[in-house]
Length: 102
Image 1: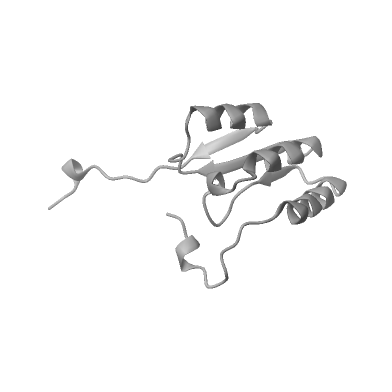
Image 2: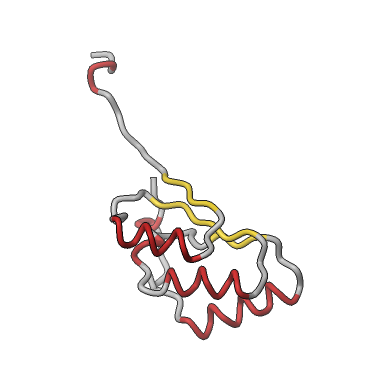
């Protein structure tokens, strides 16, 4: 499902100064929502909670992300809930072999 593996460009994590610059600009022009992922699993980013909080502090009305959920545990889930996140989509991909045609 994730197309990160097909990227030709270097895989990196966004640092906080660049993130803040982008969010500051987005806030100034009235961007209504920010999705905190595109290529890769957002729960792998060590600053995800800080990024959510910063975005909400800048009065962006809607902050959300999509995850496969495999890294969620009780502690991280509580942090995300209290971060100010507006919504999370958990994307699942699976198959039931009993219903596949032979």
